[in-house]
Amino acid sequence: MDSELLLEISNLKARYGDVEALKSIELRVKKGEITCLLGKNGMGKSTIIKCVCGMLKTMTGEINFEGNDIVGLQSHKIARLGVGLVPEGRRIFTSLTVQENLICSARKGYWSLKKIFDLFPILGERVAQSALTLSGGEQQMLAIGRALMTNPILLILDEATEGLSPIVSGQVWEVLKKISDEGVTILIIDKLSSRLKSLSNSGFIVEKGETVWTGEMTGLSNSIARKYLSV
Image (cartoon, rainbow, N blue to C red):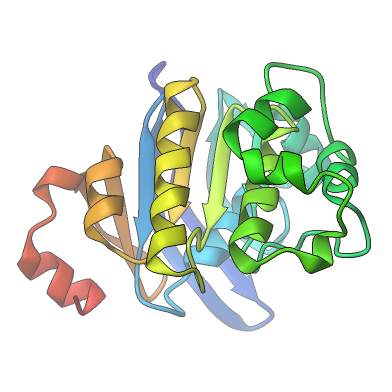
């Protein structure tokens, strides 16, 4: 594995029962960079993340994280290696307070409650408030904060701005740039936007379970975007 690579996926195939979800996935995430994973709905993006995080076992191929083969590894062991996930739909614990959500899976390291509240001041103001009462944007901030509290080497965000207003989405992009500047490698699954394109170093496009484009985001042409992303 290239020493510059943090995550390397080669010839990944996966199934849901008899249904082939991934046919041939190639993906590489360099240390210290922001990489985006793009594709229309139903093309296999979330399935890739499930494979990386150990939530889908019916797979073949190679997934190397920081030199470790993680295929078949249990989810909690992958998390301990340094993979943090902000799942699609946020999935915060609505019966817990903001602080309880943040500390429930915390691990020692750079990211602490103080660091999270510096990053998201609104969460500091809502520290004792039930997570259920937060707005959608605040819940997404909490989900990001909770993942950071595990002190990950790689932060994965599945549909990072889904359902958020343009203003809140912009705030999320700004925060992700700050997190990247703190040395966290980031993999984002989201819809293509000018902000995402300018934020990301490199990108991958998947279609029908296969990697169909890869390159620097500055090289993603309008014709490629129209062909595979309908934008």
